[in-house]
Length: 464
Image 1: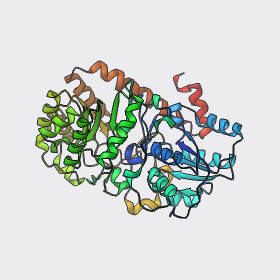
Image 2: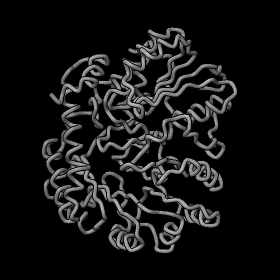
Image 3: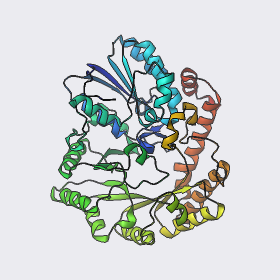
Image 4: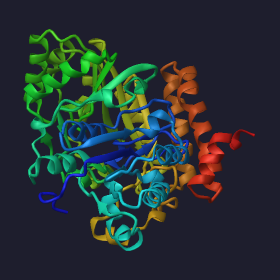
């Protein structure tokens, strides 16, 4: 919808989904949100920026609730809000695909509690379910089908143009930022760009950002870094989908970090086969300590079918080796269970992972989470599996879901055995994943609504 003539709501509340006992990475999966079992609490930068923009407006009195980070169960949050006897002009919920049915119920209960409030539903899942929501969820007054921070910027500035470099520095102090930790370390996120132009067929980011990259000015990024280091994070994550899409731009950023004598440790995600030694040297000098990258499959024909360019793939192991010599931790991503995958092709993926020889290899199941654009109007909430990151449980591929899960676990075990990381794998992967699966299996089996699930989480009935 056009926001140019929208009237600003003076008392606005932002919700980062609801908390139903499940740890959610809110801006993961192309802003669809995804469940995580590693125990890390991730900042949702889209949500944080939207709140920062609203907070900086003189026309909005803002209340922010990050229920996931605070672990405030949805029914308890509703009771607390009701007890305040505060009238809300606007309530904005950033929903997530794995909890969509509960997020819709939360929206309905908020509307019942605050009937005069303008209730908005945002996130990529809101865009996908637009037609269903319009027909079936009369308690939702507005569907925000663009990134929430883009929407808030347009509303506050009464414009249709989004200029990232005019965004304010993210105000983490509006949130419980001390809880945003990775392996116990305070890790805060910023961006130098948004979106990706690669258009890989399995990736949800291109669906929300339309195969486009939005860039921040380098001086704006330097300003953001200076703001964030005041909070003394141990690590900064550049949450770009393709950090080195423009290598010369990143070269300029690293040169500015060095010139300003900014002492930080940072991580990023990119395509490393296109990096060169001089850029790596500069990135390391500027504070690079870890780099994550997608390899995805050992079958080049399969990758080409999904529009994943394999240009210079033979360079990956060489680049990884050089990064390791420079003291950079390397993590490679691999997908098991593409619809065309066979036992033989997945074995080739394991072989490629061993050849690449990154410090860490993450094997993940193929999780289709974005439908064909032409079929969006037929989507319903039931298409999204509760507490999982997929659209349909019964994926019709060469390998069954059970076989894919077996291969993911087996390849992780083999790789960590090679790397001498079996104990670490057990503590940080196997045990946590097992507990997570047991919990969501129990909760999903209840076939109950928000109140019943919150009650079960409080009592942790699955552990009995």
